[in-house]
Length: 255
Ligand SMILES: Nc1ncnc2c1ncn2[C@@H]1O[C@H](COP(=O)(O)OP(=O)(O)OP(=O)(O)O)[C@@H](O)[C@H]1O
Ligand SMILES: [Mg+2]
Image (cartoon, rainbow, N blue to C red; front, side, top):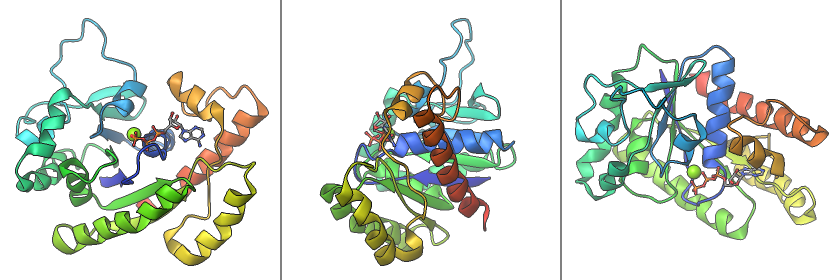
């Protein structure tokens, strides 16, 4: 099971959006995917809730950290897709002893033979949950948008990843920065891409995802954007998202 984290220390850059589409793309390719919500629940809410009469004590994210995960299982939320849902107790993890960052890898290790891919969604701040995700992962991918504020934080994210590689997880691979929310009507943003690619080299994906409202609408309806396309713009968005996901997943499987 390859464990991959979607991370960026900036909020609202499309981490959860990318996570959902990567999971959907891999599941459609026949991979068994385990999705882990370490953020405040946006990801969990995307998936259908458990049936009212389902009283199974499913595994919740906080239990991955507090040792109460034995015997509990993730909940199946779609074809080839299982979820470890965010719960309120997850917030306490950031106040726990620093050692808690080492709890996630063995907790997920239980599922090593059950799934092909584990995708972890993280909060935008550098706290225990994010460091734990990076410490548990084989790979990390970072969506970003072309704003001065986000660009200013990219070196901080790189610094975090390098610190985790040095101290806790030498096997962590940085897959790259993925431009998202690109404003196709902004000459500044379109012009910025080639020079960003030049300065970041292999650390920046050749693919990008344009800002399109249909992405938000599809997510609100519980669908990846490439499902049930209703317009030319949605078909374009679907193709672009698929292309980006395939590029990220090709790097995930590459090692
Ligand atoms: N390419 C896009 N086009 C249009 N809307 C997008 C695109 N990418 C993301 N969004 C929307 O932007 C908002 C922020 O995205 P998302 O929640 O994925 O970001 P995030 O990095 O996970 O945020 P947070 O740090 O708060 O968890 C969401 O409403 C999402 O649907
Ligand atoms: Mg999010």
